Length: 276
Image (cartoon, rainbow, N blue to C red):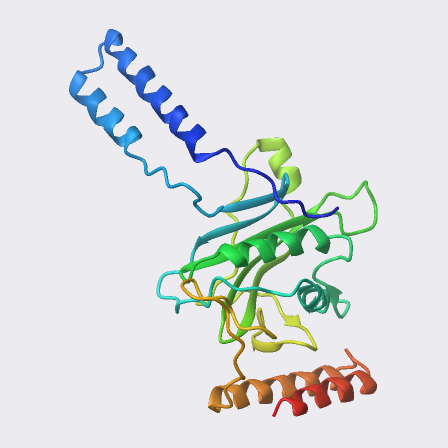
């Protein structure tokens, strides 16, 4: 399934709805509601800001698959948003992510699960503000049978430190059957900078910041909200060299655990060394 941007109701049409609500509220005078209370309700309804061209807040792909743009966690550093992310690079990065299981490891996203997510994530990153995070719920049938109940991946995305950050809370969340029976969705947890989840992630192309938190170095600098993007050389400061060291250590660990071959290890190692 290809991602296609969907249209939201225009802000003008939303304004018409609000005016309709106000008229309905005024009619309630006949039902004995005090006029003072009605005036307060009408004022609150009709003073909702109608900002033309306001950025979207949600990209809904299916019933239980979406990307939401919401305020970042309290106390979080300012993000490097908006940001442009290359489609193929993002596909390779997310395709490389695996998580630890009792049987060894499993891909976080399936091959046919990714295409619609990539478009939504790229579009959301392009309009996100410095104070926004992106929250992902991806629900998919993952056992290769239409008889199996879909389960979900919950994750948080943001650009910080020149990298696309991915924090995962759930890798295979079972909630669909319960929802079908009770019509109540769980309170989804999308991963947190402050509190680690029980997930253990691995990727040969990412820096492991924490077991549940990966950082994918971006090839391009994020877009500035007030000025066009200008290509600039990567700063060779202490943070840069620390990131490269973490990446080399992660590659070595994955080779030692037979998660990648010696050939793959040497190839990725040379790529890191060329950046020094």
